[in-house]
Image (cartoon, rainbow, N blue to C red; front, side, top):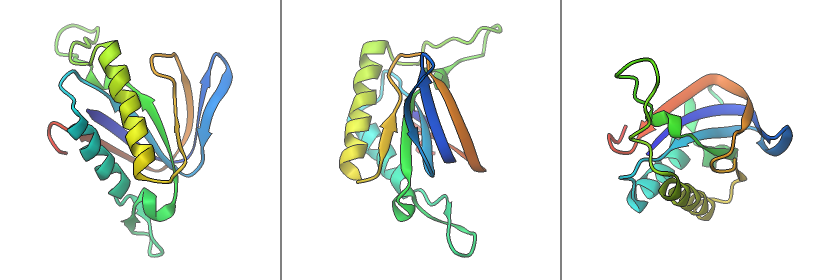
Length: 150
């Protein structure tokens, strides 16, 4: 799994020009899934995200987690995180999981993160064309890959 984590002041997802979901202060998670992902990847990634200290404390130092600030989380499926641009100018997506598997992992991720914390967890709709509006805070953007544990 790969995730782009963005610290945001606000995020809104629209589908077919209708607002589907929105959050205020918190994290936007763009989640990429590959065929080799397992429940262990989900658990490891959720633990890392929930405890990642990227919110400022009273001294303006990044010492607080999403749990500490009781922020919101928006999760969006993003298969393009597995784009390969090695050949030519059209990205290839062979490392991205097939739709049925990815959908199962995506919804398992949502179920598990909701069970792990009592935060407001919102999401996009898997496989849909969505428009995202966001106000990045910082900006702070972090990339994590569960296969490299970084």
